[in-house]
Amino acid sequence: MQRPVIRARKMFRSLRLTLVLSLVVPLMVFSGLAIYIGLGAVEKALNDRLREDLELVARAVSGPLSRAMSEGDEIVMGESLESIFRIGRVYGASVFDEAGNQVASLGVADSDVRSSESAEKVIASGELGGAFRRVDGQPVFSQFTPLVADNGRIQGLLQITRKRSDFHKLVASSRLWAIVIWSALSLIVILVVVLGHYGTVGRHVSRLLEIMYRMKPGRWRVDEPAGGPRELRQIYEGLRDMGERMAAAETEISERVTRERELAEQLEYQEKVAMIGRVAGGVAHELGAPLNVIQGRAHILRRVGLPDGQQRHLDDIEHQVERMTLIIQQLLDCFRHVPDSRRITDLASVLRTVIQRIGDDPKCANALVATHGLDQLAHIKAEPTRLELACVNVIRNACQASKSRVQVSLIDGGEHWEVRVEDDGTGIDPAVRERVFEPFYSTRPAGEGTGLGLAVVGSVLKEHGGYAEVSESEFGGCRMSLFWAGVSGHEQ
Image (tube, rainbow, N blue to C red):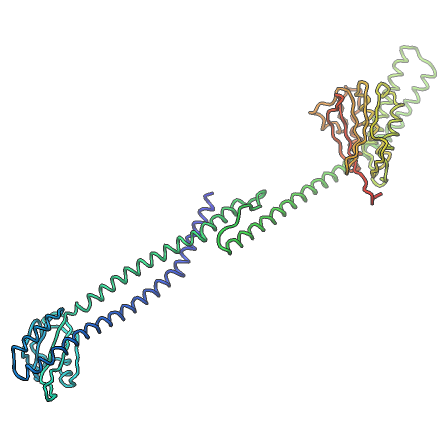
């Protein structure tokens, strides 16, 4: 789980960084510019407000100062200057005559304004004016107000000074609060973006990555419910659809591989059958003539007559010749393949014929063969001779293995017909049941069986697309079930 988590973290960092750079940073830059411009406007408004305060003060005392200056009343002039300081936040006040000479002064003020352009401009124009300047080494703002006599002539000039820091303290305080608010807002926005990203996108993307990492052959389907925003749910649905298609494709590939393997096995089996069939045919042809000669000579000797001691050897020769002939015939039956001669055949009729033949077989003389279900129609597509051969071998084996009882049943299984042959013998060990259809494998003692009887049955079943099952009979012996594909109505 470490790899998808690491990938998810890298992706989240990248996505968060992208959100911060593309949204938060531009937002903060624009908000910073807005605050900067706003602070400039606030600074200008504060400066204007402070100037207006000084203008109001100057206008309020300019009248009494003009009359006191016209009358030469220094007491009134001093009281007027003191009244300016009672207003507060005034650094100094001075009165100058029209030549620029100081007449009265209180606090820190210029002693001579003849070199001041602002003072000259006020005296010349008669309008209020002011400027930031230095007085006694202190940065101040000087407000110049003309003192007008009763006849309208400018007879002097009033200077009121205020420390420049009074202007800038408010602005600096405003800037500090603006920086604090802007920084807090930036942190809040970044926190909201990061937490919002995790809550609405990040955890759902991490879950999707974990689901994708768990997807592998055999586990393509996604069963967890979708979550998150609509776009992520759409991605989840696409992932689920892809998983379904991958599972379907995997199933189809597996089925194709299985079919190809089965076809390859069938082809290999057919090639082996063809090869062994050719070998068996050659062997039968080559051995047939010598065996016939041996059997013919044995018959001649039997007719001539031999002493009893030699007659026993002659019987052994005839028995072994018959056994060799049977082995060759079964070998040919085992590997004979005649699929083109198949036709609709009544399995029940074939079984009834086989039961009649078995009754005349000396090997089945000691067994009572009972039947069940042979009175119904059981149509299958088969080659009758091969079908009869398979049924004969199975029933004959049951007769030879039984103690006294064999039952042959025909059961309708829907798509298949089951030929069930049961006996009350010793049965077949479960460990070797899968091998009984192999050629030359026999459960009987050496010399009593060829090991080709059930091999013929297996060969016929493969030709007809059927199969066999070996289990335990309810009579205590072996149950051999042969399954043959039924024929539908439209095929008949």
